[in-house]
Length: 147
Image 1 (spheres, rainbow, N blue to C red):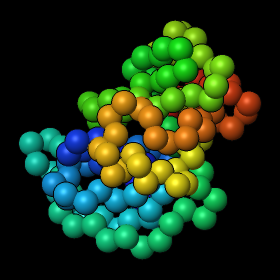
Image 2 (image 1 turned 90 degrees about the vertical axis):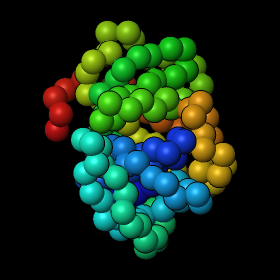
Image 3 (image 1 turned 45 degrees about the vertical axis):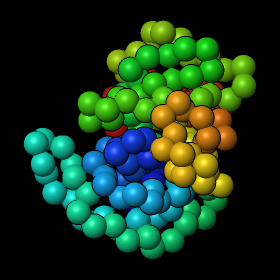
Image 4 (image 1 turned 60 degrees about the vertical axis):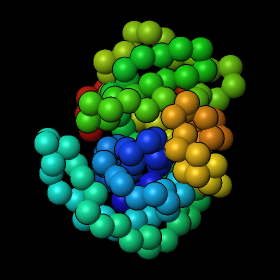
């Protein structure tokens, strides 16, 4: 699993190209791009982190994930992950069409050197360098199924 972002007590991680939301009480969030081994339990229908060990870093700083689009705005896309939302910036000048809301999309996220997002419990979508595109195809989205 790969740490993507920490917002409040929610840790967003990537596993098998899907985003997961883990409830975490860790006072020292893991830096984005860190490969982790996590043991989780289910508490009130949510994944609850019980133990986490850092085991490395993403080699190239870029990961591919799939998630459902909750909303779009100029330069931003908000994704739904297990009932939680996380907003990520898009590359400069890119705005996604409102028609993709509710669809599953594939995004490439740059998680290299994103220590500020983890340290500040980033909840405004900033701090990840703004390096996103829809599926690595020049900013187009993949409106296909849940792949």
